[in-house]
Length: 134
Image (cartoon, rainbow, N blue to C red; front, side, top):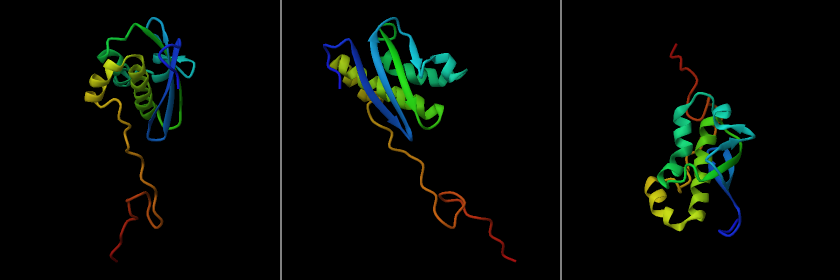
């Protein structure tokens, strides 16, 4: 884990099956995910963009850091949640005063919801095959 004295801060965030490793560096507010720009990676999904920028907006750091993220696993939506978690944890290391704001919004808590496992004799976790009376 990086300390406050280094130039870059690296933190990990998780959601569902997704893992995101975010690297914060002093910059102009650009975000790169897996080598692509934010728009190039997410496409036309403004809600996911807002989700990723939420911790930066709350702590007034939108144009102070460049963020490089490596995200693996899951879908794009759960990767956005993992990126938000990683950025929140990194901002906490930048300044401890951010903790109250981020904690109140629930951005420091890992979302524990994961997909339920499939059970035998069923189609999915809970869905059953169609029942025929006759």
